[in-house]
Image (cartoon, rainbow, N blue to C red; front, top):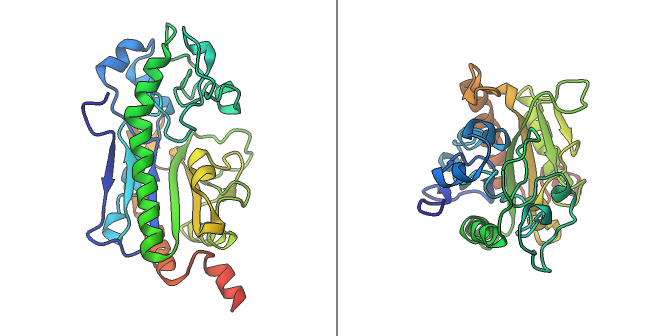
Length: 291
């Protein structure tokens, strides 16, 4: 899994906005070594993948915004988890004391090294060794987060603040929702992003015709919780887009509305970029209220 780059970083010619985009689950490079380990084929493993998300947001560099996207699949190593969220039942040897073995994500089978794919099917037919998990984390997780942390640091140094949009997709239908939801925004229930920016993004997506909900059922993962520090002028907002809007979820192919969805996302991004240029860390709503 490590012979090729583990992420793609699409940089603008000149970063003109404090906005940074990340797509930690869009990787779809299922190498032969991984498939040999797994009891599932590549098609089944893709159920955990945020297919084509990095393509939907591909307008970012042309708008002066960097886009960081994983090349490794989520089923191999999940960059939206703590580095050591591991299920001891998956391993033949003991885990180190620093491993987080009791998180809700581990209990659900979706730790840093997942036990199951999104559909609930076990990935492996044998137990792993801790050294295998450590190798994945060192080769994939660490470089991804080093790159993301550097993008945030550079943005704060240049602009005085940073807004990270953490881009994901969600299966359809959306759990227990009785009404169709197109987008779920996660700001850790107000802890990872200033309300002004969450309000602005919700309104902007609504203006594109999307039905938007906040924090239910996705309030944000590790990236949201770890990097979101509004008191230090770093805002992080997770965006989950319904897959049915743009793809065939069974065949993992782009759907007939892919281009239209990409165009709507591009228009949304253009408006967000302009807003980030105009307003500071707290966002347009709070700034307007203060004035």
